[in-house]
Length: 227
Length: 216
Image (cartoon, rainbow over all chains, first blue to last red; front, side, top):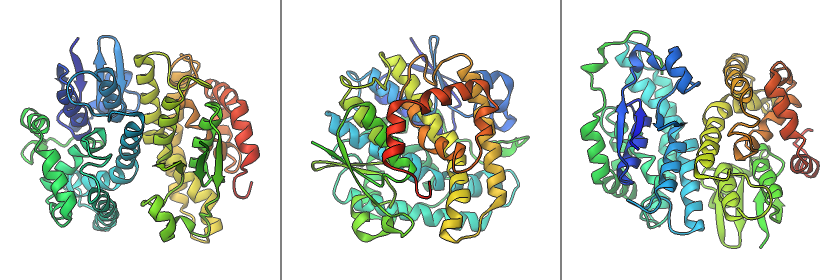
């Protein structure tokens, strides 16, 4: 069964795509035009009542929330592709710990930065400099914790690549490329080495290649863009 | 081995406590005074570098982030106490879906309401009325989705109680009691029935009794 993934090429759907590539699961993608507010339209809301991407459909089994989807597929296909959950229950606990860290500490400021320094200017709305400064400061503190953690462990959950590292790929990619804040990564020796390692995985390069982020030329269709 | 849980008076640690009670896992608690800023003290930051509660210590195995802790213990003790993860991989996927819904859609507005209504007065900082209004509107929309979901399913992940429901207990308790916003639950027939069901579980009543909220 081929898994359908809705919402490419946006960031959270890419979290799902890179996981499916690592797990060697076949998928097909269905674009959702966030610029035309397709994700807030009645058809999409039947699939995902909160109106966000991604959604996956696997036959008649539907899931949403990217971090739920990656957990499901990492577990369901435990015996194929890359192991993304550690080898023991204790290792899996560390994966969960750092995946939750990404969701609750890393994601809010980096998401706000994405909205203020990327989406709003491209929509012709001036980015809120105060919010950008506040969120960059919050993100810097999170990255300081990562620097300490990664000075003792090759990856976030331990000495093995896992969902906890994978989950950081999509928005960090935007940070270092379109948002031009590469210094936040490069100024931290261990975060920098870790970023080089995870962003050069063939799975991530494949996702970027197949589903490039909308570039500034594509962002001209701004009617009713809803974040 | 008795699990140590830091910060029991507060909401997120209660997410862990109610899970441990359901799983029949013995625990002891260590108070952390958030009002006095104990969670930002260097000794605490060695345990939890982001300076939040809870943390659990199980011998020399430390975990933080309440939703990571409950997933770990629900899995580790799968064969005892209440099953909180569903019976199949697909049921577990639904549990994960709705636990993420709680974390990403429900939690941000209910947390803002909690902080603004309950904690700004105690901390002596100005209360943001605009944020309260916006957060209540957002939470209303989330509850509308829950009403629809619960009109078709007894619990959020399906016909079985799970981590997805459990995770809602602590902050919803604040909403209906300390924050005086019970109408948000009672105005919705299926959310109301669901709340009565989950909040009357013996595990939750035990946690509330043993660890009253600050100012309760």
